[in-house]
Length: 211
Image (tube, rainbow, N blue to C red; front, side, top):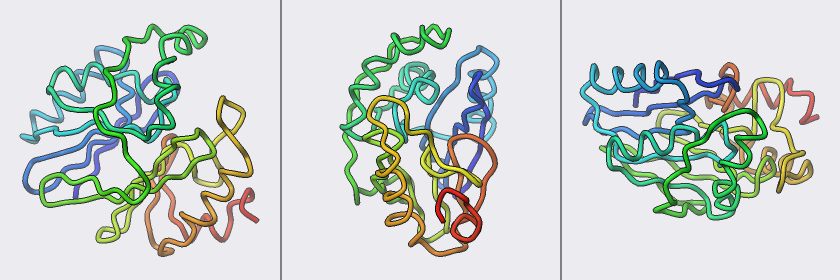
């Protein structure tokens, strides 16, 4: 699989396009907000002859869903996330106004993802891991074959996701990380929702929130 990262909008969200040799791809957390961000994404899709088949939200905070409508409608593809975050998605326009963002309402969720589900595209698959705490429906997506994890806003390099937003819980996020993520192989590369990549071993050994 090939992972392309776009850093987008005022919150510096990591939006990902994951593709394989078939040309099929999934788009994770399309936080595209400006016309230039949308154009860079479309150019990448066209230049690499990719066929988007699904939009995934690791969670539904407004900075991660700003481009849901654009991507889903442009490519006529479905949207998937965890059921427990749909109430957040439905409040996105209201929350965007709080942060000064004009939010185009997201399309409705077509597929509700549960812990242990597989996301299939092309010849590839990702395992969905329910990792609540940052939000009730936070998901991480894991490839055991290629040893990488898309962690959303649960685990960062040297930090963890904030827990002071509606539905957040410090105790829950620590449990999610320790019981579901730190048990993965140490050399698993972690791609968080903001900031640089890291790996499970480094966070196990050095993350001050996990001591």
